[in-house]
Image (cartoon, rainbow over all chains, first blue to last red; front, side, top):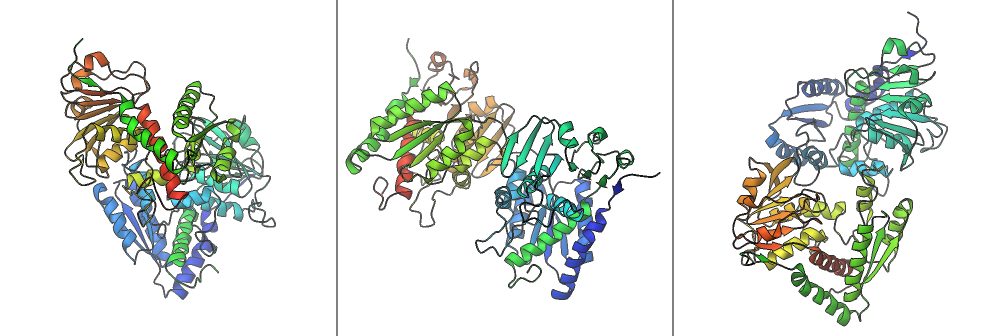
Length: 316
Length: 316
């Protein structure tokens, strides 16, 4: 079968990032990398599998990864203990854990856990502090601008993929490299679609954010009502990102124009791959996990350099 | 008709607080009190009426109250301008304004507006900063403990009512004055029921928090699952607070034990008053608005003293 489009392996995009992390830990840290702790309390086999997979990638690159399986009732204590432990440099909690169960502090227990991770160890960048900075386009932790904020791993992975595919115009200044480009993101969750839309809008794009019952335009710190539909938004988009957590959802291919970049972040295949690749000039990234793990590793080094060592070495 | 219970006028409870504010402004500020700005953009006649009512009470006591009616699209700018104006000491935004319309920053636009009020002017105490302190039982803005946090007006009004009715045991230390007391709160909104439950739990009570589809126990910084039902929770409660925003809702009176304090915070009458007052020893507060406005005034003086004058005078 000949194809008009091109399928892209995320492994290729992740590789140089992983190599840089591995080399740095081997040469500068004598192979004794920072320590990442994963807290697993939800009894979900797919979370366990993801944790194992992350562990394998970390061990390959010299990062000490440790899964701690705990009962739900002991999770907050385990988190606080990891927050305090000077030999722990990054913490992941595997969600959903308490689901919609509310917290004394407002919001859900899962929100509360997410906000309870120390900003020095929040390798996923999803706590209130980093979220607020992301949405306000504040890129540094400190006033002296020496400590860059971490960004959430999956949205960051997509940015790196778009850079790799030259969707970013590197000749433009920061904040303008996506100016004039339309992007549709089909997902508006707090951990993927919404921060991704905000990050792309911060870089200059017009982002159509689609969820099950609404469509908004994100443009430079503003969320705007629009008459576009998912179909019209996709048709005018240079990039379409699908993240629909539903087995049977398939992106209607009549919405995809020629030369579009299509990225699937869902764990389900949101796209009929064979048919998509018949569209001329399409570039398709079916999985992003390897780039996400590479970003997790980079975030861990970022936190390590920001808060655990001076002077910085990995980032100049 | 003879009644076994007693009905209590909130005006009586508000009076000494209003008098203290009026006297302080007259004597210490030469009648030129702090300035409170109300931002009205929702076109809701009942919000306008509430604003007028607040204005009347403020003028009576020497507080300069100004309503600013603006278009929705100009509201954020009007808020930022009031934040910056050194002659404005307190800001109220009348909600709902954008309803469920989401913000670029996460949450809804109304949440974003609420969190955008300067902590120096957040007279309702509903921004993220004061909410976080309330839920964590942090009672001061500063480490030196000279600047007390403001608390949300309606929940604070209910605390003052319960103090007035001697439900608080003033012989016990702070944080223990409601120990051993069960309270049911039928409402878990972010602006009334939830902060109220947290405040009562911070003072030692076991608080049953009831909403349309769930019931949780708030106890000293913890939210706990329980087998109680609204009926069993109310029956064992010394205090029942109703805040159901539904015209036809009436508290089932077979749930009310003798000697219970019943407080209605809803704008609808959630209680059949005549029948309730047949229950021996019941104390019933049908409206709390006057105490709420007195708390708003106290919060305004609190902010004024915390951030606009030294040394403090109203609070020693």
